Length: 169
Image (cartoon, rainbow, N blue to C red; front, side):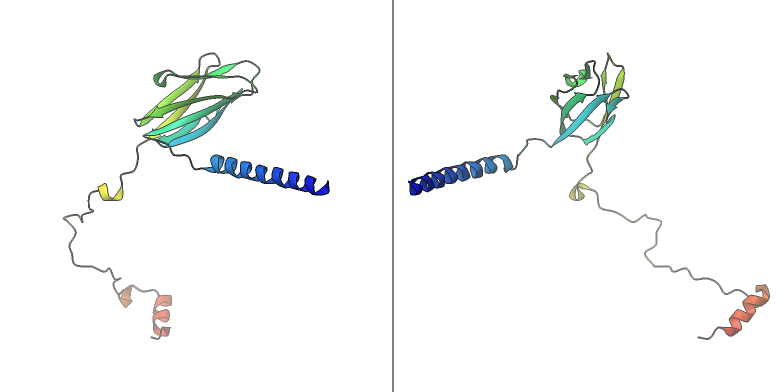
């Protein structure tokens, strides 16, 4: 009887471990996106959106998670991106927008008179695409070094004359 319980327990444990490893592999598998994606949580408060300003690069998609701390419903509206999300206290709304041009985009809620901004920055040019650096035409190729001129003794103060006499090389 005791052996039967151990065998059943062993089978259950092995089944659970195989199931758990398969689930872990599926959840921890890296995701591949067609375009770069950023995820931002936005909270509607008495003072407006938090954060009010979001930055991203051209060609990126942004995934919003929106919620509210207010008892009255609010929203996030971006008409030029066909995005509307309702913000209700205790619930999270999700939405996405894609930005393919640099500039500043406004999101707002007409009922709460609150405004936020998304700044889309142009990407930095890759090193191989940059033009080679050239020296200006006015710069000579000869290396010139600046050296201080010797001060005539007639222009020196008494302290400087004493220091010069005490200096040994």
